[in-house]
Image (cartoon, rainbow, N blue to C red):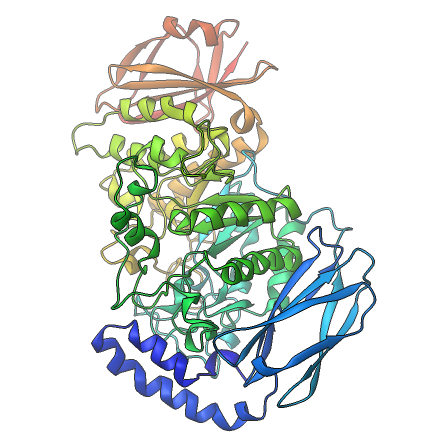
Length: 639
């Protein structure tokens, strides 16, 4: 029986109270039918589920808080007898269907089945599993470094590797419709796995799928950002064990895995919303109240409490209840869940959706708990901001705390740099202003370590870069060259390398299926033969950059020196202590531009020539260059 279908009258009322009137009318019948249909089986169930679903011995933090769920379980008394595990007490919640059980799992505890004896209206013993922590596999939890190149994709839209899970009985969306941008299309984890070789041919070292956990929502559930079960992979993507194997196989192929997580909100069909443990599990408003989506008040010395609260406590959307992380129970639930996924799968990093929307104190608590258990774990957050100063506030930076918030997040998706490259190459159709890149990078002094930031051209929420630059192939190549040679961790959105296009109006237009991911597709961009014309040329260009970067640490960890743009030519160098040096010149002019190379003497001294790595063309004179219009050169200097 699916626990997400259990629905008390309290849960129904709570959900509907937060919905607009039209949504209430459309949802009430379906929710009530679910409740009636499952009432008979629910009344006989003593315990429906316990979160976390299992745990491990040997964790650095010995405290474990179990959220027990079942009809009337809140009135139960609990006892146990297990060497090395002590019961620290229980806690009743507002809903009679929940009970919190607090345990201490000492270092002396051994793996096994922990018998939790519940006595009350019903007597039941639950065999809770304690597993041995994995300390042998050295490929687990590798983290993400500037040596990596991330490929972001949407599992539902990338490739269908297992048609058997396209339709899963009991889910609220139990069909696929590839002609609908809001429907499921059938992509899955197996589809990604089938194309590991494709990713490696681009030089990719890390895979970032959008959330793979269950999203059993009645509409647009494919994107994954409205979780309905924190402890299960969406069955249309695969299974929990299948995800563990996916991570293991990726590691065997030299590919890391980034797990996309949402701390701020959940889906309205999550069992924790359908039957809330307490009404304060999510932020409550008299009527539905949406976030203002503006994080400026968080570090504005003149901010109003009204604006601050509206941003942080307002709901992201009508179907995405805003979690109240100032509630210690909620905070602990989330922290344990994300520790659970790391230990269970061995994943390498977390990308954190809507990072600044969460409670500030909770973010510090969450980050510390994860880093204490997994020092190597990568974590980078999404903070959609316009300036470096605003973004640096949310990452480890040079600043003193603001209202007690001293960020412990290692890195961020670099939205200021993303805006800079888009604006630079698309200021208007006739003018390109590369000074925008220089000025944005100049502000890196605010970060503790800007090389950890993730740089990108586009993503699942943005218009595709090829469309942003007016389908100008030369501008696209300039953007790719910049992304792969500037500081930080490059990240490409699926399909950018084969000229997938469209504007995010609506978002579904930039989330189309990757050509060749489904049997019978007319185009197959996964194969060299299928990548004809400029799509093939773009792929080859990206592949040369990616493989070169993978083989040359100077572009991963080398220092960066940039020169003030002159005549709209932006020049910078990546160099290391071994003398390896790569020079990048970007000409924003339509016409060829002559460049005086003598001003770069502090970086070119000792070198006599160079080779442009994407074309193989020789650069014989480092004192003077004539670079074609709308072109980026990536030149390896030679002595």
